Image (cartoon, rainbow, N blue to C red):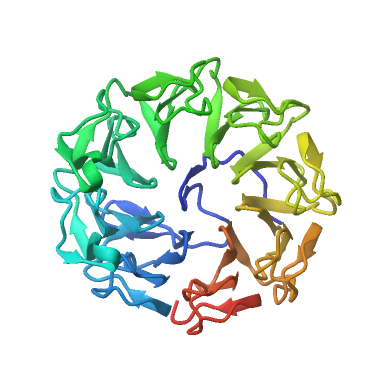
Length: 455
């Protein structure tokens, strides 16, 4: 039986940084531990292997598979020239890897300099004339990085010193360097930086996450700072004004983890409670209201939370006793409480009693159970619940083919597909597969888990 403990989670467009899951065997690459992991992007997925290499599969119009082509692949392909990676982050159209020596490489779309190699022009031109690199390029001037995060059109790295640098688009100040301008002007006249710039006034950071157009850092003292787009109050500083430098998230003093959703964020506190801020039209802040909040509000009635996950317009918490609660958008059953009514305060996920991890996707959620099996609930139009149907489920249904002792050790829910990492280093995925994002050599949706080929 696995113990449910307080985990430090960094959810950043597919990157999850956490303690090594039970059953996983860590490996060493240089001075860093490599834990095999799987990350889901919009229409592509990547796996970090124990030997420090990586494989990706799915859509590849912008070179985001990193194999030297921009041809979609329905089975995993080796990311070229990557041999000592310790972490991987997957965004919409680009991907990045942190290397054991503290440097980083990125590949895929580069119209806004999000690859960080000093250009926004190539070396290739991929789909629709967008500048890209179909193989990893070195991020300029990056040393001693310990974590990496990928947003919509920008990327960020955290350093051992507790400082950070970001690169890419800067229209909303998401680079955090105190400006909304240059130093370059990239595609379409968008202000950008094609090389990393220092995030102003950020010290003592312990974790970093990149959202669509904003970023947040969890500090070692339990506070947090955010910067970038703020139309819904997602920076948490009491305003709705974009900020080009980090601002303190108001009233947050004992944060242990932070999770970013569509336009809202949530923090897990050291005492097992939680606070959320930002967009709240569906009740995803969990405070009993549906009004946006530009400062953190207490999630009502939530105690003994061990982990938190923020989806598109809903949020979920894993409790220390192995049960879960969710709140927010529920028209498709994503809260798992047997109804399709939005809930502005947490409701118990029905029949989920031995969960050790939880992942909130776009309109569905999944839980990993202590016996290595999994359950999912919510929207199922592409089979992303994995139970052999395309019928939505307002309570958790068992993912087919995961019997007790299967030893799934991690689970991730994307927009329209889901994947699980197994203890033996293999992976299974299910749901939408139009671009081959399930990795089984086909482009046919799968309503039950299929083995990712060659992982």
